[in-house]
Amino acid sequence: MGRRVFVVLAAVVVALIGVVAVVFYAKGADARAVAGQRPQTVYIAKLLVPSGTTAAEAVATGLIVPTQVAAKGLPIGALSTIDAATGKLLAMTDIAPGEFVVASRFGTTPLGQKAIQVPDGQVAISISLSDPARVGTFVSPGSHIVIYDTYVPAVAGSKSAGASAAKATQVLLDDVLVIAVGTTSLTPAANSDGETPPVAAGALVTVALPPETAAKLVHGIQTGVLYAGLRGTDTKTNLTQIVSDATLFSK
View (cartoon, helix red, strand yellow):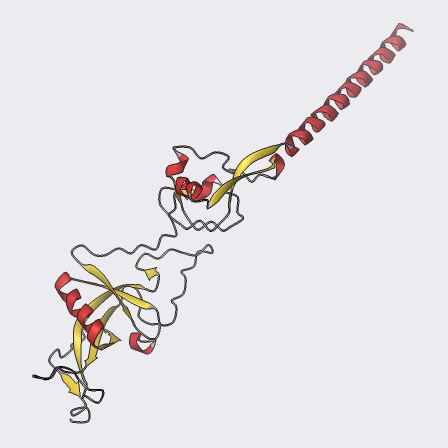
């Protein structure tokens, strides 16, 4: 008899424990549901945030603004405050409008920056060349090119050249390093899929030159029509050769 009573009491105790556990679980679930619906302040991109923009600048210019969303809808790492430390960080890539601003999008070095590295002691000059004038799309950062200049020779005593004046073509610069084509440089930034962006047709070609040689190129840009040729290994160019309307078909 006593054994039977003990078994019954044990069953009652286990049942009570189960009921209490269910009650506490239900209360916890209610608490979690309420917490998930509780609004929290986070930052969201209102306008495009360009790569390299500091978090503080983005706030000051209204590129990113605070908003309130339900806690359960927040992505991991969403920024709820921008203080003195986080305000100095730079957007590592462009942040599109409507995106939540998360900590992982900021750092000390932008990945999407379009800066080019100019060799020490040289200057970068950009020239606008059509596809044919830059060997289609085969001139790329790191290429060495020859630059030809087609111009109207100056005539002693003349103040201006007429539209029918004879033209001449000559090598302006023999060996020029290309450091960028369009926005693609020697150290290009990759797209979000990891691929280098393609070079656009008719893009600018940026070259590096010593200052005194750069002055010649700038003058050529202002006064003539430039054409580029892609150099091969051990290419020899005749810097004194001048091809004119009169000599074009001569041997």
